[in-house]
Image (tube, rainbow, N blue to C red; front, side, top):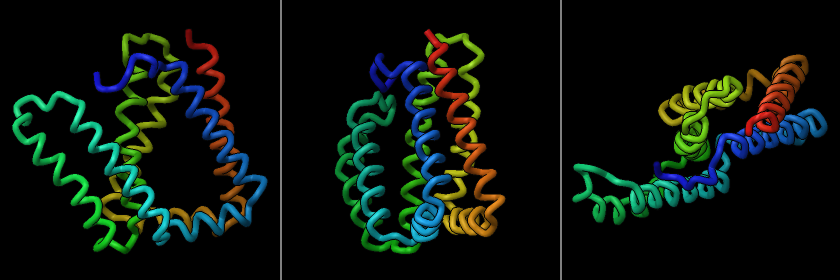
Length: 186
C-alpha cells in the first residue's frame, strides 16, 4: 500500500463524481469555450509542461516512498534520472506533449483509485468507479503511445452538436451516479 489510509472508496467516489459532474456541466453551459479549449489542448505547450512536471513529480514521489523490492539498489539512480527525463521530455518532445503527459497522469492516478475500491471492499457500487478507471487506463495507453488519437477523439466529439451534447449528458449522468454511489458507501 503506497497511499495513505484516508484514501477511501467513499472519498474517491465523491471526488471523481464531483469532478465529472462539474466538468461535464461546464461542457454543457460553456460549449464554445470548452470545445475551443479541447481543440487547442493536444498541442498546448503550457499544458504539456505543467502536466509533465506533475507526472514527473508524482513518479519521483512514488520511487522515493514505495518498496522497490529487488530494484531497491536502483532507487538513487532513478531518483536522479526522473527530473532529467522530465526536463528532456519537455525540451525535446514538443509534439503532443500535453497528451502524453495527460496519459501518464491518468495511468498514475489509476492505482490509488483502484486501491481505494479494492481495499477490503465488498460493495458492488464500487464497480462504477472501477469500470471508469479501466476505461481511462485503456484510453491513456493509447494517448501515451499514439497521442494523435486524443486529437482525433476531440475532433470527432466536437464535430457534431448531437455528439457533444450526448457525451456531456452521459458524463454528467455517470458522474452523478458515482457521486450518489459515494454517498451510499460507508
